[in-house]
Image (tube, rainbow, N blue to C red; front, side):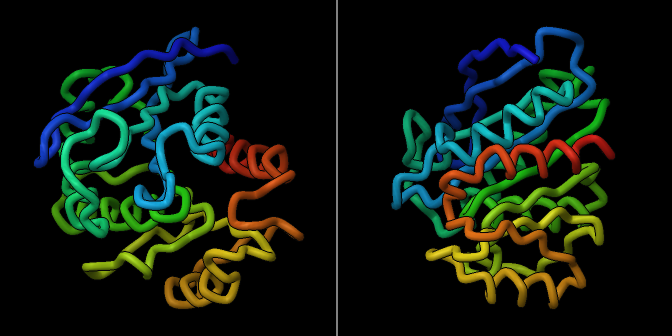
Length: 214
């Protein structure tokens, strides 16, 4: 499915949140918020895992929102160990719902890669605790949730957790422990590194299979 891509800005606690919207050519059936890896290690919305997830979402009829976290691109502020980033994403969610009510009324997917998984999991947990609408699917790739955790985590039992077998940044054992703590199965891609080098097609197929049930 082809997409239209446009830049858009939302307002976070530290100032503007620099985003890109990938919109399906046909009518959207919902939206996805896709969060990038560690800002201090080159993480940005153009990351290939982020764009792979976003393309899968667009293929499934979702508007994909790819924000830059604080201090990346034209986003205001400085890296805040997931605390400020989580607050910003909660504001973005509220603003998107107001600006795009039709898409917001449909299906909602929340996804993250590496550092982005921690922000995604904490956004989900906050919404669940404060009676907000929670996403219809939570997708975590190369999970680093516990590394940047500042609050209790409560994720759904159908959370999609995918990890590379030979991840050199977040060892598979760490992802397995997270899965164990939250009673989640872990999908392991054999011979895949943290950035899924040479495995992006497999990753996209796995994401599309999960989205097909949303």
